[in-house]
Image (cartoon, rainbow, N blue to C red):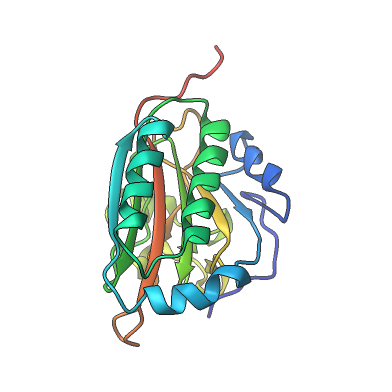
Length: 214
């Protein structure tokens, strides 16, 4: 059972993009900005029928040029989607204060990471443009020892009813395992193969360490 309505101590959730800044709070390991992508839905329903495979690394300017070139060569992708990706990259740059990034925009047809896990990074931004969103766990649902010793989801989960899911189109920033001083967020990909579902997933990572005050 997936719950989506309850607020949890390790999560910052709101409709103002500034809520994402709360990921730097000591108590937060996930930040979610709720939003509508209704203006993109018609094009996304067309785009999902075609391959989507964009990956780039570098400064914002370099990624922007590569993304524009990719969209020019893909007539099934709308410029409004490109502009949204660029806006989110700008938000991530503001959030992380670094100068280089890794970005991917891909169509996903398999369950990429079925086990609840933490990413080996400092921060990651995700947006599922099409299909089901990422699953994540509040602290009270996690057996950290079971996770750290490599146990399965059944052992990691203390209460299956507490599993949360990010809505399609929402922005999510995940705290990874090398962010200083905090428990990272445990999350996993939604199961899509069984239902014949597909996703369009945007992923952004920092390409260099973030600087933190002493």
